[in-house]
Length: 459
Image (tube, rainbow, N blue to C red; front, side, top):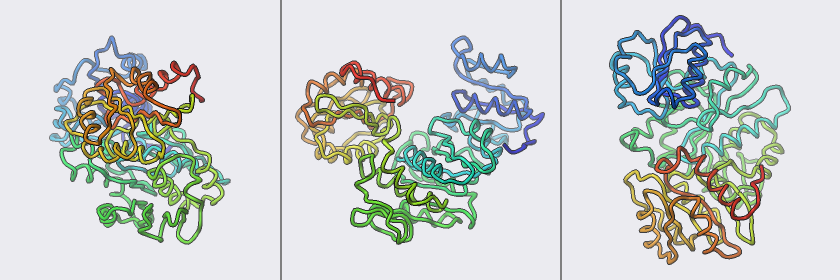
């Protein structure tokens, strides 16, 4: 951990709790700041706030009073999910107070190397693969995952040594709140249209994503998906050395797939079919990870070992169980149409799909081709149930059932399935209409599968 004095005896506002806010508040307190934490949840139902108060940190709960802006805060550390239209955030910016996110704070104290991964889809799998590959090296140092993957970066940065690497998943929300964060290797997996309710436009969303490379220099690397003209064009904004990856054989200067094999430059790595996790999207994730691993001098044997044995990240096309000829998969992290489309394309077997969730105003006609090609039965739930059913009808699916939620959909899926089918939760929607987050949604699905089969999930 680097010695940082810039916060000592300075007033800092931490806006919003959860994991990032809790860890940011504790770190700032440790760095000698006068920390005020503000969270909208009332104190009596806010164990995080209660815990921080017992640690001697000032907490204000039950809302976001504008009077906070009358205090002389040096900086505001904002929960990534709080929009910039929030009155306190907007007011702080108007007053010229820097508004950052917890990953920026973490990068300031990190002694080791920083690798950042962003994109619409594939961030978590790519982040995990990179860390596993780096840990195949025999030299000193360890790779840690952090960030949007569910591990607060500020906690990891405090324990990482100078020889360690922090592989950090960076969401667009996080990247909006960085100033000096400087990854030695930055990865852009892809960019599709999502989170437009937060960013206001696709252009703003792309601008947020590209902040991952804004502080890079010619000594750094920008690993970018080469399969879209738009993404190739974005690489021109980076001052770093561009290392492309392509599943569609559009480059041979980085990592790519050709004739069913994966290469880095002119070196054969392995056959694509030998990757344990299914789907073309996971070939892309593997190629991105290969590019980073090769930059970091990971032996090819170590790369192959990871790709042949890694069975997937929890809630990301996660294999759960096989029961009476049916395979159950949990893809709760699929919170947009593209993610569900990619998951469906990973299977040749007929799919019984469980889908639906938060209504963000969009419809699902774009999902219809993938539904038509892969889905035999569609079970819908949540706020978008009718919209999802309409897409299923457009795709010509005859068996469409409505269910209360993803748990009640499991026994229905079982009744409508046959040996050889895949039963998959891949909602194409955020979870917040019925669940606090996608993890809890996925956990509830797994529990329903366990109740149905009488078999516990393998840990």
